[in-house]
Image (cartoon, rainbow, N blue to C red; front, top):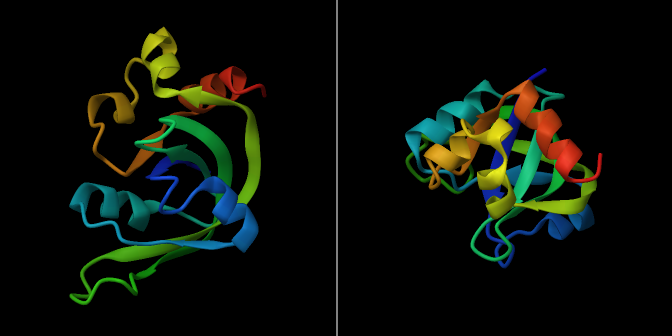
Length: 135
């Protein structure tokens, strides 16, 4: 099982929206590197849900429920989407500021490539963020 981080602006699609919907299609990704990460996701992979712009924090955990399929919002047919389902919110959101200040997270992709909307997370980074978020 792999771990990932996906970013969404909460006024567009928040973690609470995913909880309400029960399952969500992760679509609209138009960056080739991020799309490659979507293609690499497998059913059961765990995903941190990060609120970008407002909040700038990891707020919840989701799980991949359907692997890459043609993105229904892409008229060119070049990009893919995945489906995810909520697992649980973090007890305490882990802010970008906290991540930047945590030495164990210094090599996180989100800190090096901040505009990337889908990125891999190492097992150590996953555990560190879970610990910071209250387990």
